[in-house]
Image (cartoon, rainbow, N blue to C red):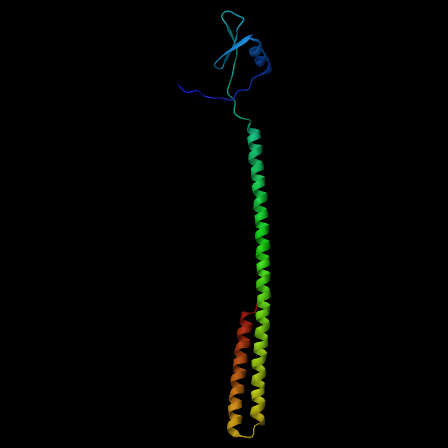
Length: 151
């Protein structure tokens, strides 16, 4: 046979009677030891733990979990924002480099066009004119590509 533990609430008057010897406990039955035959005074009933305490503990755990979730979310957002700022700075540097490269290519095409109009030799004029047209076409294509990426 195995023993079973239970949770009981003991009223003060029963506790005092048990301590003084006026009452005896047999299982869950409290009997008056001074009477013959001993009369039943009370019967203990097993009680559940205080559910309000359990619910309070569970709600506190839920609150702590909510606060931790909020903290993790805030940290996550700050990390994402920091990373986005780094990416934005990188894109600005790339954008500046693209602008400089576009300007340099466009300037080279203009110089080739100027050379095409100022050269005396026909073959040289023709070669510079072809370079200028090619440079302007490349600059136009790059400009269209840049506009298609812009928001």
